[in-house]
Image 1 (cartoon, rainbow, N blue to C red):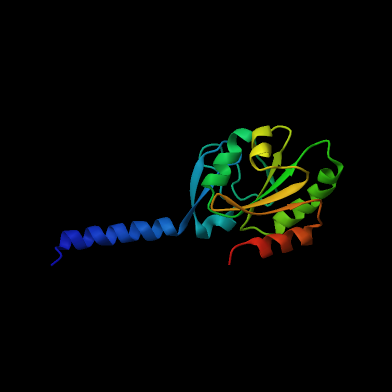
Image 2: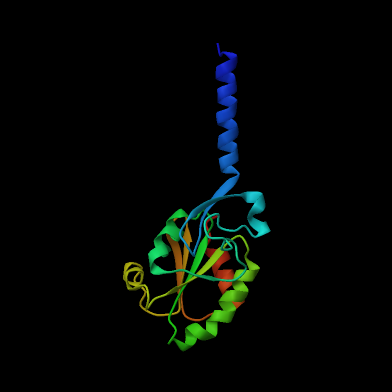
Length: 164
């Protein structure tokens, strides 16, 4: 038989679990801080609690080598990574297309990783040609695509590659 105190405690624990399930963790691409954001606020342009950077920007965010692993491992939304370099012509021509795709998929985070500035990540993920897109879900790479693509092809690839 449950006492009123244990019933209240169980109800509070259940409420806390539901509240946490109603929130997602998003790692800031600027400072690396982990932020818990209620799902219903994702479309309200939430900002990082530490540095104030937009967490759900409608354009791709640059991510440094130092913060990349934290962003991928700690973000509970799918992440599309554009592995690129400033000297790469196809990378520069795909940049506006990548930005258009980011604007069309607000529940997916789009980030850019400069492979010249992130040699460890480039080696770890075996980036052999650029531009290369990586799709991460739950901290794991689930798909990759090399070569410049128009925005619609990027969107189609992401939708096709996301787990059901």
